[in-house]
Amino acid sequence: MDSLKIIGGQPLSGEIPISGAKNSALKLMAACLLTAEPVTLTNMPNLADTRFLSQLLQTLGVEVYWPKGDSECRLNAENLTSTIAPYEQVRKMRASFNVLGPMLARYGHATVSLPGGCAIGARPVDLHLQAFEAMGADLLVEQGYVKAAAIHGLKGAQIVFPFVSVGATEHAMLAATLAKGETVLENAAREPEIADLADCLISMGAKIEGAGSSTITIQGVDELHGTHHKVMSDRIEAGTYAMAVAAAGGHVTLTNAPVGALSAINHALRNAGVKVEADKDAGTIEIETTGQPLTAVNVDTAPHPGFPTDLQAQFMALMSVARGTSIIRENIFENRFMHAPELSRLGANIAVRGSEAIVTGVEKLKGAPVMATDLRASVSLVIAGLAAQGETTVSRIYHLDRGFERLEEKLSAVGANIRRTRDEDEG
Ligand code: EPU
Image (cartoon, rainbow, N blue to C red; front, side, top):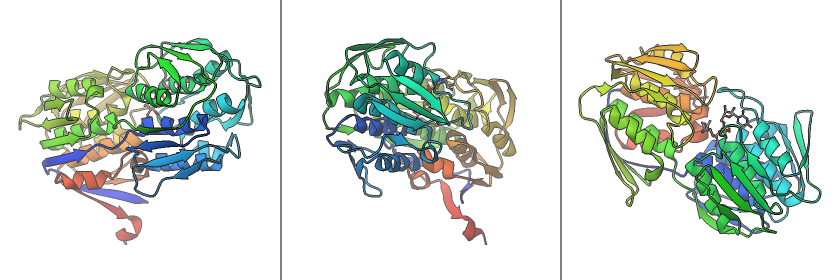
C-alpha cells in the first residue's frame, strides 16, 4: 500500500490546474448507456473511480477507448452484452449503481447489485427506487440485487423527492430522458454536476428544462444520439487546493476552475481572512494568505448552493489552525467525522458531539503518522500535514487515488514537500 510523506511548513506558490469533476464524469459515463452511438467525453479525470466505472461498462459490453493518462474517453454502447451489474463491481464504487436507470430506460430491464453502505454513512438508494417505481418499473430486491423491469418502457411521472438527493435526481433524470411523456422532478438537487449532466443529455437529443433549479422537467424522446461533451471542472478539487494554500500559506492561482460553482467556498475562505480573487471569464481563482492568523468560521454543510459536505473535512483541517473556535455541522451524512481523531493526532483540538464538531484552533500542528479513512478525510490529512511542523505520513492513500488526479505532482509543483512511498521503500 502506498503512503504520502509530507514535510510541512512550506508556503505554496504558482499555479494548480484543476481536473475534470469526478462526480460529474461518473454520471456522464453512465449516460453513454442511453444511446447506440458513441459518446466522447473530454476533460476526463484519470482516477481510480472513473477507471473503475469504465471496467464495469466494459463488463456490460460497452466499447471503451480511453488510453491511460488521456483526458479524452470514447464510449460506445451500441451492443450491450449484459444488463447485469455484479456485486463485486458495484460494491467497490457506489456510483456504479447509476447504470441501472439508463439500462432500464433503453432496454426495459436491468439487474444491478445494491451498493451497500459505506464509511461515511448508510447511504440507501430508496429514493432512486421510488422514482423508477413512479415511472412504472416493477422492482424486485432479491439476494442483494435490484431486478428492474418495464416491459412496455418507462412512463413519465411527477416525482416529489422528500429530501434532496444528488444521486436520485441524476438517476431519475437519466431514466426519464427515454420515458414516454413528461417527468417532473420536484425538490431536485441543484448541484452544478446536475446541470452538467443535463447539458450533455440535451446535446444527445434529450428535452430537459430547469436542471440546476429545484424543479426539473423532462419530455421523454424515443432515442438519443451520440455527442462530444467536456466534463465540468472539479469544484471539490478546486476548493481542496484553495484550503491547502490557506492552511500552508502562500499565493496560488487555480486554473481551469469552475468559478461559478464555488461561491459558498470562496465566501467561507474570505470570512476566514484569505484573499480570494475569482475571474469567471478566465476560469481562475487566486488564493493568497496575508501572513495573519486565520479567523475561525462556522460552517453547516447543506445541499448546493450551501457549503458542500465534500469539503467539510478539508475545512476542519483549516480551522484547526485558525484563531478561535469554529463549529462545523455535518447535515448530509451521519458518519463523516472520521478525520477528527486523525487530525487530533497532529495536535488539533476537536470535540465531536453528534453531528457537530467544535474546533478550537491551535497555533501549530505537529507532524505525525495518520491514516486515511475515506476520500475527503484523506485529503484533509494532507492539508493538515502541509500546515504542520515536521513530517506527516498519511497511510492508506488508495482512497485519495479514487478522487484526486496527480495530487502529489500538483502540490509539489507549487513547492510542497510531498512524496509517495511504497511499503517496499520502507524496508
Ligand atoms: N439518501 C437516502 N436515500 C437515497 C439517496 C440518498 O436516504 O435514495 C441520503 C444519503 O444517505 C445522504 C443524503 O441522502 O444522507 C444525501 O445523499 P445524496 O444522494 O445527495 O448523495 P450521493 O448521490 O450518494 C453524491 C456524491 C457524494 C456527495 C453527495 C452530496 C457522487 C458519486 N457522490 O453522493 O460525493 O458527498 O452527493 O453532495 O456524486 C465524494 O465525492 O467523496 C462523495 C461522497
